Length: 321
Length: 313
Image (cartoon, rainbow over all chains, first blue to last red; front, side, top):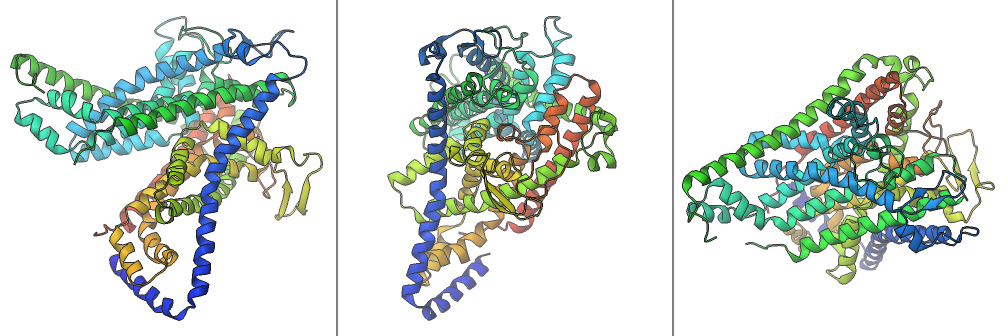
């Protein structure tokens, strides 16, 4: 590759002499501005997302004939029944607790398993074992989320949960939560492993020289040294869990209720949006508009978590070497 | 650090050490078991429904006759559009950020913005795309669209895009753009600075350096990143569901304005039904989907092995 580059470089110097300098500078300018324009597309995307969400949510809160729907009642209301009954209620708390319940179950599964697997990969496994396990995790990371939803519905709930207790219905928070946990496991694992492996070998050697066992080295030196990266990995994985849609739409059920009981069905914010966009809700009706306010809440929540992750990485990073 | 090796008796420390190894091994075994059970359970459920006619027939109300022709072709169209948009734009953005932009506040802001975008739930992109592509922000009424070309021919466009395959492809390109940018940036960063310095020292302009030196060196890594982003795109269902991918369709796309469905949406549709027969064909469709994904990954690995020679810095 170096030879090719050198040849190209020689060719460039040849041609550069032939071409008029003014034209060249002009082309360079055009290219730089085009690249800048394409870069701005990603900024524009963020601006457009926020604009659409704010605009449509404002439409929801100021809708004529629904004076009882305010930002305050939306954020603190404990009943979410937009489609049922004569008097629809828009209190987002059941959707938020549903989302958090599924996310908590996912985290309770994926964080310990993912971190321990990461420790195994980075501290214990031989290079060949590590290679095999990494490709297995890559497969797991590539599986479409709808497949995990199907797995929750046709395997986790009927074969793992229902034999344990009669109380688990076809749709429940536990099955969906475990499936989401399996989905975020590769994220927790590979990102934590990256940050554990970035800890310099000299730190480990120093601890061993002081007479540490492998447990001491791992738990008291390596993990604390890589902690900022590990926590950022957790936050990123939980953000993915909050925004996960197809698993919960398939396996968590469709009843928005304020419960912490994992055997019950819950509705998450994303699952509600699926219900609305798939259903026949009229495009100007209040229930259709409400999905934008839910999306706004979801966006705010995930955005805050991504920021938190970036801050953890930046502020608490331990720099070595 | 002072507590290490003092106070605690060696037997306790050895026991802790063994427990730690057992816990790590246990967790790893669990992760591998989960993957095996997942693949196995899907294979057992779906293998019997796989056949040639399953790949070449349309959906049906009778599970025994149903096939995945429309979603298969839909996935192909949507992914092709997505690749044509997201890969060039992603590489261009990465080039600007890595090769042109000075270390400024604006650059930091754009970088932070990209990492934030990669954390946005995909269904939110669907909402943006519905407003932007599906409805042109309300600027053009769907009842009175601007059309170009013959509705039955291949070259047909109309604004707003509505529920078309073009809207779907553009939606997915929004979803994977941040992933593509980050992958391309990493590829560019791996190119040794000495190559750039050599090109510049020989009098090349910045773009000549990028086009002739940096890009060729970074290409294999970039293509691997592109394929991995595309494998993310091919599995996405949520944003397409918002933009208007159809759950049940009896045609294949003929032009950019055709209705479409994709494999994950078809799987969602069948998996959501209570009858066990539909679960079987859902599992069969999942096998096809996973086979496509494995093929993608295999290509990525081959590119990585064959083309990526280590660069000496």
